Image 1 (tube, rainbow, N blue to C red):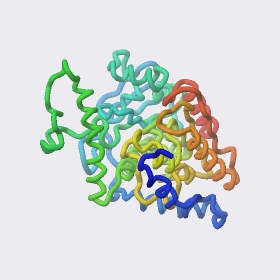
Image 2 (cartoon, rainbow, N blue to C red):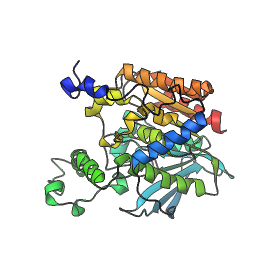
Image 3 (cartoon, helix red, strand yellow):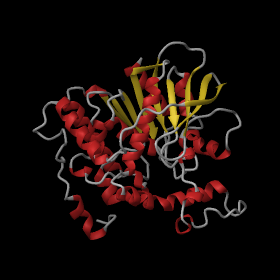
Image 4 (cartoon, helix red, strand yellow):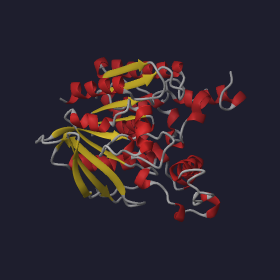
Amino acid sequence: MANMIGAYGEWAAGLVADPPRLSFRRREWTDVNRWRVEARKRFLDALMQPPPSRPPQPSVQHMMEYDGVAIEHMTWQLPYGPPTEALFLKPAGVPGKLPAVLGLHDHGGNKYFGVRKITRMTDDQHPAMKRHQERYYGGVAWANALAKRGYAVLVHDTFLFGSRRVRAADLPAVVKGDLLEQDPESEPEIDRYNRFAGTHEHLVAKSLFCAGATWPGVFVWEDQRALDVLCARPDVDASRVACCGLSGGGLRTVMLTGADDRIRVSCCAGMMTTWRDYLLNKAHTHTWMVYVPGLPRDLDYPEILGIAAPRPVMVVNNRQDSLFTMPEMERADRILTEVYKKAGVPERYACKFYPGPHKFDLEMQKDAFDWFDRWMK
């Protein structure tokens, strides 16, 4: 069968046992709590994250109210790179501690933007973000919609997106190529940057490997620092915190849920399949952000999300999503179903398939938000 590496594909797929070595589906694992400790330890080891640091100290740049949502525009400085921009949203005029969601923006082949992909602060929205939300989110800023429903929501730019993107002045000529050329009539700045960022990904991954790090390890670490900020707020109930995202945000949801026990509920949108699907069928459609060297021998991709068991997780997929194959999306569902059934809490896992292409539309958002209400309100 045709695959990403031709005659070597089935051989490569056979290098990994099914179930893998640390899978909760294996007979030797009977206690989900013991398994979770071991599985998380292995996952964190594989991520090769940056060293620990103190929680970031956010600085509020300005505050506003838009369409019933109180918004704080804030920044914080991590030990490396430019400052992180973020938006904190909550229902206007609602006092007390609120359940909270860390909103994780997508990849979408657009690194020029981050936070603004799933938020809105004004009716005068950037045209590119208006198109983005119409294409992927049913024309809404879902972080705002969730805040209006009664949640505190924090959305931040992650590594290499938005405020965290690389600057041409910091790159050698051999890498930046025509990034500095100013010809907006032939190619607008946003398009030019995103084209560059797509071709730059393999260099980012190689460089991080040389540093003894991984791209997933970096973005999980940064998402955990945002979680520090969110959980420290006096208007947030840190015992009721969830995360959610589409596509690259779904990837971040999977990995943050697997890495951090503070996530009590999660919903992964449009980013659930198996390592076998990436290996044989779909590596060409995905970012270098996905891959954790060595981990597939111990855990299949859906089992990273399954580390949350017995805490509730939801997956929402699209049947015509060209980023995945339907058989492997269905196999991922069977894997997570088995994990939660064996853990004795089958009702705490939900998976739904929707018609249409890659998206997190209004119907999917409603089901995800209902899931948060069920377990956090």
